Length: 100
Image 1 (cartoon, rainbow, N blue to C red):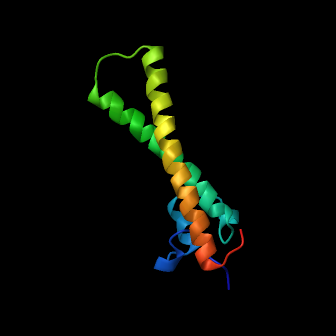
Image 2 (image 1 turned 180 degrees about the horizontal axis):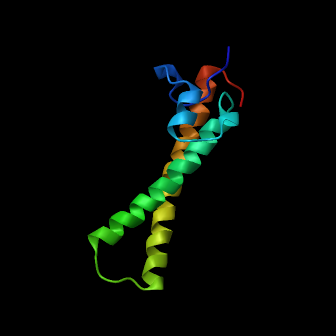
């Protein structure tokens, strides 16, 4: 029997379900790496969504300096969320008794 490491395992989500849904490398299923891969994927998705939202809010043309500021702000916000996810993951591993 495989050990599920994904953060939703208690809800009955199997690691392979995550792999299939997000088109990930099957080798990360049933390893702690699945969570880091998902955290990084969500980090990038958050950056993209933040930038897209800012560009939609203000439709005026952007020069490279303005785009750089938007990207910097997006990365800062996404990084904060990524750090929160990593802290939650540490607590979850501890609760599960998984030494990762």
